[in-house]
Each structure stands twice: as C-alpha cells, then as structure tokens.
Image (cartoon, rainbow, N blue to C red; front, side):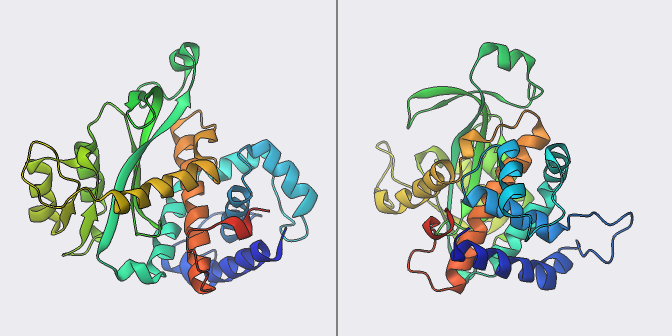
Length: 300
C-alpha cells in the first residue's frame, strides 16, 4: 500500500482505540463475552482499506489482505468469519461515522445536503423471486438515468464536502419526502435548530416543509418549481455537490457492486462504504488536503 493509505489507517486506528470506540460504548475492555481475535478497530481499518482500494468482493479482499496486510493485521479471519463480523458491525460503523463527522470543521456549519440515489440489489426476475430481500426491496425508477431498478434507495444527509451525517435505506415505492421525514425524525439529535437543508424539487411540499420547520427547527431550500412563485432560484451549482458525493460512492467506492443478498448484508456493506468516505474526508481535514473529498491518494 502507498504511504498515504498507511498513514490514514495508522491515524484512524489510534483515534478509534483512544477516543471513538470508548465514546460510543464499544470499548474492548468493558464488554461481556470472549474477546474477538480481530479487534473492532482492526476490523474498521480493514473495511476502510478495502473500499478505498476499490475491492468490492469480500473473497477477493480476504485473499489480498492475507497476501499483503498480514504483517499489520496478523489475526485475519477466513472469508466466512469476515462476513459474519462485517454483517454484525453496522451499528458500530454508523456510530463511528457520526463521531468522525463531529471531528470535522463543517459539522458546525449550518448547511446540509440531502438527496437519494438508487441502490440496485438484483438484475433478473429470478433473483427478485428468490432473494431474501423480498418484502424489503422493491421496484423503482431513476429519472436522472432513465432506468428502472430493483432494490432500495439510499438516502443521505451530508455536509457540503460530502461527510455523511444521516443515512438510511428505503423501499423505492416510498416517497422521498416520507422516507426523509422518518429518517430525520429518527436522527433529530444530529440536527441543530437553524440549520439549512438543500434538496431538489422532489422534496417540494408544504406539509414536508412545515414538518422540518416546526418539528425539527430546520429550513429547506430547493430549486423553484415552474408552477410556484420564485423563492430560491435554480440552485444548480449547489445541487451538483450532492450528486458528486454519490458519484464518489458509486465510482471509487463501488456502491452499486455491494453484492448484499440479505438485509443485514446490504446495510453493512453500504455502511462500510460510507465509513470509508467519512474516514477519507476526516483524514483530509487533518492533513489540510486541498480537496476534502478526494480519495485518490488512498486508492492504490
């Protein structure tokens, strides 16, 4: 691995052990049961390395790690054991993402971006009929790419440079406003009164805007629709920020190649990619990198 990725992993490991894991209640010294051979901090660092290097397959990743990383991580499990640890770590990854977000300067800014993107989970009718995701996933349509898909929609609330703050998966048949309202209501402790959320035209609706203002104390800014009085303009430049975040998740972090076949598998694999994105942005702030969402220094 290149020096930049080694530096990120070393810094992240120390930060996890010294501050984050004890803060979120995952300290290795205060949990019942047998201590796992692969520690939580090592698991998280390996997940970050996997997705920053763009390795979508768990089998391929274990082969790579056993060939190149056994010196840094001597207790690597086999593929089946690795999969079980990853699927059980979704809550841990979400908590760590939040703590990394708190450690970046833009956590204290008022602006947040919100949007959703398709997360396909199957490409054939036979897969849809047999999948363990039946009853959770559904058919949806992506207008920006003019395509139908079967799976979920990933909803993401992030800072302007792309640091994940709130995220979740929803059946595509659920409306964007309804899914976002439930998501933000559940994680309202991550919002501050007076914050401004920038969304697209799909979030237009008096009831939704009233919910944000009266229940959560935040404001929504979105592009004006043709059938209403001008308020905010087109917002094309700002809207492009969140689109570029999804482009990073899909292009560099292989989001649509997640390969999850169960609900726990999909959740953990999405969380792992968001963790890798959060770790890269967090480290770029530490090193004062000019482009905070750039992961190029860590992908080889």
